[in-house]
Image: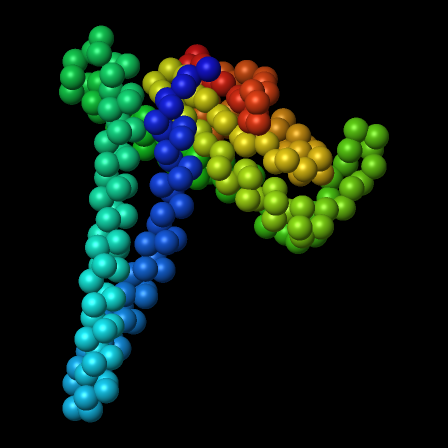
Length: 212
């Protein structure tokens, strides 16, 4: 198994920061708008509120700026992690390939999560005994929460797909029902790789692809 530990552990975390960034930017814009309005008001009470709100906006601004900086640092760590594996090539070629690997990993991870996410509230699957099992919203939500931490890790001639396994039995059956179709999907999206069967490692299913 191709273990890019920094990418495998950090990327599922940092990709969740962008929704937070959007919320903070909106909150900051609203705060500055209110602050400006209060400053222009001649009433002393409003002026004091404006000063208090301004003091609140300063640390919020730092947080808004910190998230993109963290993303840049993480991207560099992801690139360096792969670059060290290309030391047998020229520095420039190895660096370009490392960047391509990181970009492809993120793009394929996005496609994987889109495939795994169940959007319909009315979902059913057929079990091993050919029985149709209906799934409720609670099961679907638990399933989506777990599988959104799955990733695709591409490192030149090896692709490693890590699919997080939910805790519940019904959620696990949902995932098992998708695995063969997922393997076919990966083969179509990355035809230059040959994908192995699905293996289980602790609480994740692993599909490995080797370059043809």
